[in-house]
Structure formats: structure tokens, C-alpha cells
Length: 283
Image (cartoon, rainbow, N blue to C red; front, side, top):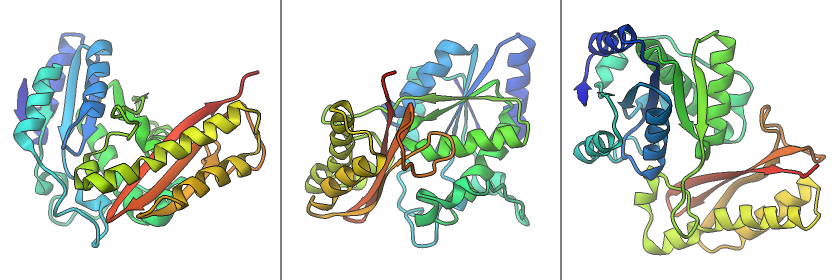
């Protein structure tokens, strides 16, 4: 496995892989890698001949009051995971490499970036789409892999690559959970044992909604209300939203449809957690 820090080195390595007629799979990450990231690298390894992983804590997706400074950066552990998973190349750039002095261009997806996570974190998705667009331009993969846990993010990225005619296939891997149901996240490291227990309420709320759906409740509004009620009654948890939305527009649903997505977000202590579930009605 090669580890490179400069853009020309990435392009050279990918060009050599293409000369060998290898499909290129790409997994962009911010590091602090866990089993969820590993599952995406595994998928890329199964489906592509050459696998690139990027590790870059992207400052433009953090607001000034957020956790950029304390975001975990366990470089040696991250590289070990990439090596064990069979990555061919890790791109580990400095901030100055991705954003040289004088950089003034951003990529923004209207509409989708302004709701749910975008309403709580107004500049977040502009930073995400900018850095992902730059990374796609640098790596030029055939397929890029994202996790379902950040459901809104992968919808926005799909919209971006469609609108800008980027020749890449976006592939979404399932959310990976701990045994108790908590969705894996690099920010889980911030949680105390008591906070971690409280944080389970997000997954529990999604399960309650799914159980009601399976029992015959079809109203998205009532299903959302059940989830909201469960999260609100959990001590130490502040609800941001719990909604049932269209899978592509992310607009809140008033009427049931064959496929719906439940999105939940809450603050547990000082840590924000998000989760989701895809619900399908039996025909």
C-alpha cells in the first residue's frame, strides 16, 4: 500500500492502474476509521481492481464553534486499517494541498443542502460538496463509496455528480452498527458511557417507527411523532429532528409512498448524533 500526500502522486498512481485496465474505486474519509469505513473499503476491494482511500479532516465543513480542533486523527491506526482492508493507495493531504492560499471557489447544491442537517449546520454541506468534488477531480474514480448513515450527504453528492456530469458511480453502503444498535460514528468517541446509553434512543426511535409501520400505521406524520416522542423522553438528549421524507427530494411526507426514509438527529451532551432507516411498504 502506498501513502501519498501530493496530488500529482495520486494522479500518477491512478494512471498506472488504468494502464493495467483496472477499475478504480474510491473511499473518501475524514479518518478516525471504524468498521463502517472498513465495510466501504471492503466493498471497493470486491468491486474494483484498484482502491484509493483519502484521509482528510476537511476544515470547510466545520463551523467555527464545531469540533474541528478536537476531531480525532489517529493516523497510524487509520493506515493500519487501510492496509488490512487491502487498499492500494491512501491519499493523506495537508490542508494547504487541498486549499492553497487564495482558494475562493466552492460547490453548492441548492435546496437539498438547506434542510435537516443543512438547517442545523448552514455551511456544512457547502464544505462537503466542495471537498468531494475536488477529491473526485483528483482521483477520477469509476466508483465512489459512501455510507448510508450520512443519508442526506450521499443524496446531495448524487445530485452534484448528476448536475455537473461527473463520470463516477456513487455507491452507498449500509449503516454499520454496534451490537446494541448504535450507528458507528467517529464522534461516538466523545460520548461518556451514560451518554452512549442515552444515544441509543435514536436507533430505538427508528425501530419504534418501523414496528408501527409493520403493524399497519401508514401516516408519515404519526410515525414521525412516535419517533419524536421517544427521543424527547430520553434524559440528556435534545431532539433536532425526527421526520419521514422522500428518499430523493428529502421533503417531509404527508402521505405514505412505497419507499420512505426516516431521518433522526439529536444532541447527546455536547455531541450530535444522526441516524436513519429506509422503510419500504409491501405491495
